[in-house]
Length: 225
Image (cartoon, rainbow, N blue to C red; front, side, top):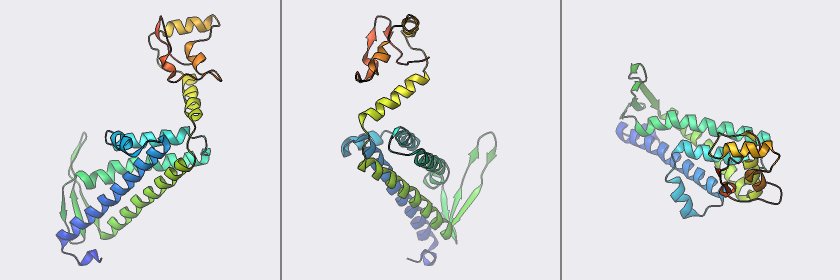
């Protein structure tokens, strides 16, 4: 279809619609990738993702990439950068398309933005047909990367041990004190094994480890604070 030959109003609706359709397909691929990584069936995945904002979904998949033992450090760096770029893109281009009032223009679509963060501005942004095609290509590139990552999650599922190992690393880095923290430090100072350390000892994985309680309350499950 030669969009340039359409009536300006019809063309404007078509261009915005094309972009939003491409975005919805890309976001659907993101949901599928998250489901593959977590081995969640379709209905449960729909319930989960329906209650997550887009940035939350990006944070989820970035974290799943981080804890995946089958991805190399080079893979992780590349994937993390792309997902970060996607999050930034969503906050700018996608939000403009979805939320900013627009009108037909003889070459494309005119967006009437309002900026009021310490300074009031009303910039006008014009996307012509070529710009829309370039942005569609960008969204489709993001989708291709997401599907690649999703396929890797699906073909090589993460074992439970990978999550346990990630938790152990996090506990060792420390966390804010919770009730029972003082008792934890006293035990450690006396050379006693804490509930958290016992939970993550080799061959004695207790899940969830924070279910281990003592008289001092919920113990902070770290091996170093």
